[in-house]
Amino acid sequence: MTASRLDRRFAELRDEGRAGLVTFVCGGDPDADTFQAILDGLPEAGADVIEVGMPFSDPMADGPSIQAGNLRALAAGMTLKRLLGHIARFREMNSETPLVLMGYFNPIHKFGPERFLEAAIAAGVDGLIVVDLPPEEDAELCLPAMARGLNFIRLATPTTDDKRLPKVLGNTSGFIYYVSITGITGAAAPVADMVGAAVARLRRHTDLPVAVGFGIREPAQAAGIARLADAAVVGSALVDEVARHVAEGDTSGLPEALHAKVRSLAQAVRGARAA
Image (cartoon, rainbow, N blue to C red):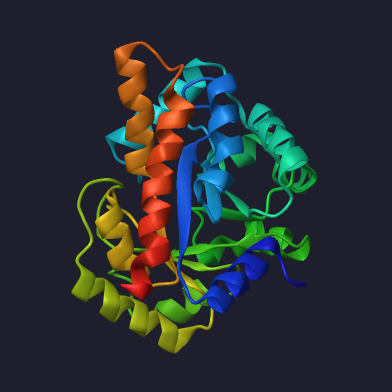
């Protein structure tokens, strides 16, 4: 594969001597216009890589926050086709920030894998994280995606042992996403000592950047991860910001509030290694 936006971004981060901030938002949450405003402002707020969740009614690996975000998006009429339209509009103003779609195979299967890949590439998607497609199913989507130049990013967990790890890494590109806790998203906070040992183990097996997520909610936590890994991933905390504004019945200030949270996280990540 030629160098992708993800490859270039992580190379830039290495040159700058810092870790990156990866932000996750649910596609279409809480409604189309607000989501577009959130998405468009993430790079300026400090997101180095953006993950967008594909709306799905049964996100089994996700906790209550992201499950609720998916349901809000679906209730507002978001579909995978419409989400790709939002990404295409984002790409009209931003050609540099890597954007990864994350989710489950069911919506892709319903869309049609070949049709989905062509549409994703046309929209400006850089990579895919499909959490319920193991390496044994690479022919379903991973290999066709990589043949078209899309990065296919795998999850590694605390239970991924050295015997399993080479299989997980076999067709992985872009970065490896280390899930720092066992269980569902947003359920606990990562423990630095354990994360450090896990990242070191992954680096013995791969030269890919290691991004660490699950349970990172506050700037200090993000900074702690940034000292150990190549990127910190924040998702549930941002989706909770959406939920708070929805619960208050006023989403007019939501994009600005979410971007302010991202700025605080980005500042902590950027300063982590200088501290």
